[in-house]
Length: 221
Ligand code: G3P
Image (tube, rainbow, N blue to C red; front, side, top):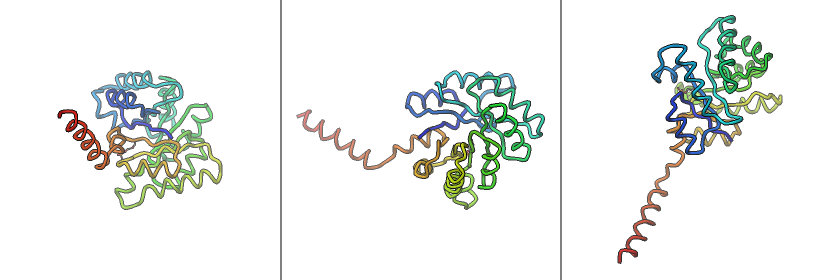
């Protein structure tokens, strides 16, 4: 059971580490745009800073922004050379599939992203993607149960013993996390605040309040 954090924010990464809930990082262009980074050079240096925070078997997905095959390959290889902990994140398009195939043959790890259907997940696995990232919350946003997709992908991958790992993404609330682990995904990737929301239970707060009050009522006498 692995907790990846979906962020490019160093403070959030350090906080996840201190909580003991950091098995990897996923970023995307939108998350990168939230940081104070204004050039490719700064972004690449930032990726390296994230990687330096990671331990042995942990990694960080960095997404390509090109869309044609040659540029995707070039960008993917450049990202992979930046740091050994970088997994190249590639959108599931025709060129994306070809890029995954090419990079996986070169033993470069890939994360196939923007997965919204089982069909897409099949092509990603056949191409040799290391990870597949189905977007649970964004499917829920359009009235499709995102967790059903996770379940379907899990069944198909199990049927054919694909090595591609399910990295459930677009996690929006604690039940997404619980249900994904019930299905048996390799990892979820989530904002840290959603992981914290797993802690929430009113009976815990009420119980703790009572324990402390009972203790002080006696001790103060
Ligand atoms: O990294 C991709 C994914 O996790 C995005 O999540 O909340 O923007 O749909 P969200």
